[in-house]
Amino acid sequence: MTTDLFSVAGKTVVITGGTRGIGYMTAEGFLKAGAKVYVTSRKADAVEAATASLSQFGEVVGLPCDVSDPERSAELVEQIGSRESAVHVLVNNAGATWGAGFDEFPASAWDKVMGLNVKAPFILTQQLRPLLEAGSTEGDPSRVINIGSIDGIAVPGYDNFSYGASKAAVHHLTKHMASELSPSILVNAIAPGPFPTKMMAASLAEQGDEIVGANPVGRIGTPEDAAGLAIFLSSRASTYITGATIPLDGGLSTTMKVM
Image (cartoon, rainbow, N blue to C red; front, side):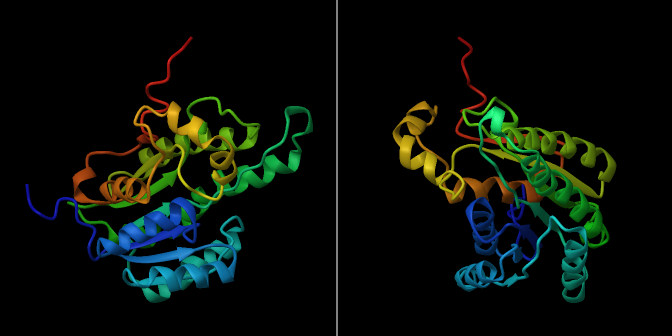
């Protein structure tokens, strides 16, 4: 086993929704591991702030973009292509959720959540494919990592009907994309459980002890957990894995007991 088996040094990584939460954690991890990272998010001020913060860890470029709009994501790819001859890793992390009771859940919540969580990762991968193909080598294919959720594996404890359905769709889309793009591009998904993100902030504030107590490893996820799995899936150590969805939840979904 060579020392560079788990290395991502020198790789170019694109992370959508990279200004906060899982995306930011992953960006920081890649930078510390020696990769060059492009982060994108819908809000220009958030991109500017995240880029300034992340720059202490390595070479990072921030590009504002609403990836739910195919025309804007095409412009993003054009901007990246003007700077890079190849991309090695795409992390489709940008996402949205919506909470409302069953009888009040609006049709617009389906359009917004399915559009950003399912359609956008497909379209952006489609648009970025030439750069990903250019970054692929026989011994180390390029990678696409789709961020799903354990809400797409088990029934969520929240009224987020379109979110859970969208993440289950992401997991299946990952398999379909892997079948289509292999062997030059490997496609896998990460299904995070509880992490200290803005999306989870209210739940952790109200039920933090209960959430930790229900987890087999007795804690919630850390930035190192998020970065570690993404880096593994982007390194030569994972070149025999594609089409997989890996729960990143401390065993919450994989050890669930049926009463």
